[in-house]
Length: 130
Image (cartoon, rainbow, N blue to C red; front, side, top):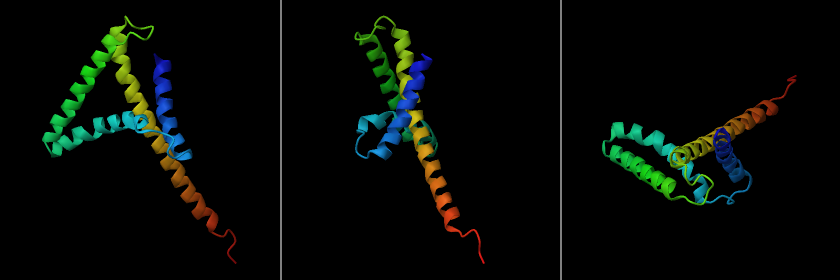
């Protein structure tokens, strides 16, 4: 179980890095877990400011939960076909860690950009001013 979670985190992180290295190589589907994670953070905050957003958030959670239960119950392609509870837990964990991995990839790109800016400023300043 830990291996699957680690793998999904690294998938999300490397999708962001791959997108930077090879623009256009990733489809929208690769960023759905990132959008899901962002919605889990942003929608509850926005619902404090604007009440109807709470209904959108609750609808998202109910839809995800019902799809999770459906796919867990009717997934017969894997070796875990009789492990309903395991799959019901693993699908959300996989998507959440994948999205968090994407956030980590964005954070790494942000730190790299700041580092590059800092180095360009530092390098452009003459060391010996005479």
